[in-house]
View 1: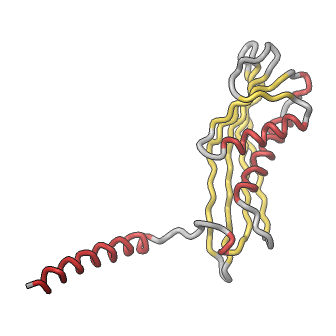
View 2: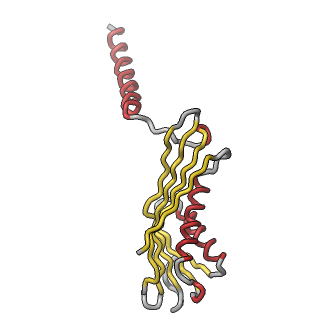
View 3: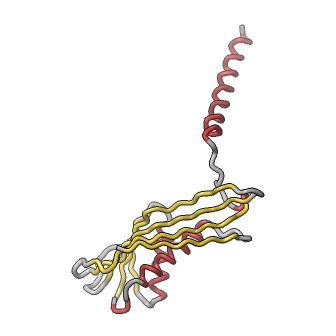
Length: 179
């Protein structure tokens, strides 16, 4: 089994959306996975992707990498011919974190880990298996990214407490002023 990773770091002047970064990471993973063995003798590929989020992004990245090499790709099952390869891609982790910086900027960390497995249909032989990881770190302006601020514990507890105590105060005042 092969475990590999790569990290990129950039200070961006122009915001690159999270989805574009994730797609580039999966394209890089697909290129590395295909580069580890010689797919030239293989007829067609069947692609199976297991992911909770961004499944079509992962599929498109692998389809693009395979078709760039002149390969035919089918989505789903292993119902191909004897010489076909089933490519299984399992997204193990996919996450984005934001760390506030001075001057209205945040440092964005996007990490992706996927397991790739190439299996020969005829005898279920695993030709190649690897866990590949990509990490992207960049700096963006606060207003360019959505939902980057995580409320602190105090903020998460204070807001409901203020709302509930306000409602209790209103009810109390309604009953005391009446009498």
